[in-house]
Length: 270
Ligand SMILES: [Cu+2]
Image (cartoon, rainbow, N blue to C red; front, side, top):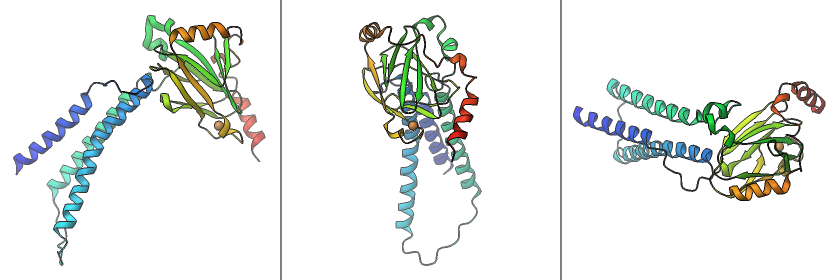
């Protein structure tokens, strides 16, 4: 009996370890490095959750079937071993969920800050494409400070090149959300929120505003267009001179906008 339990625990531990150390297998169909990381985590958690669900349901059905004719059931007696077992098993599972989630959340492609690029790319920083994303009622403005290009509602990005989006708002709360690429962050006036990613597949992706911002919110849509590097370069060349030098939403004025945000809120509250 004891050997059986040890064997079961060892098997359970081996499954957890196998899932934990499984290399981040290339996620077929992932369209950005960010989306790939998120789907890998989702799959890891599913590998744990599905067997647990099956086990619990199996025990439930077995119990119902086995004791269906039991007219005088006896109350459960205290069983310290059983209690210790399920407490330890639950703790191990929660620990696994916590560690696996933290690992992914700590990835720069999932949680980016202003320093993400400098801290993670070293000499390759020049390769990064910077885009200023400014949300406002009810449209999106994209500025490419390095080339002076500006575009409304369509964010054109190169494939297989790291991109850093500096997301802010010109009026009040919005949120940048491109689910097809696994990207989402809030847009606050006077504050910069960063997204760091690398699109891996060309195509068009729907961009939504994911924070209710007024009567035009449902129409606050845009497109993320991922093109090959050559097509992206020719698009940049075609549109050069279309925008100012970095637009009106540089990181430099990030601290100056708080007063504006407060005023907006005050003016719009009933
Ligand atoms: Cu909105």
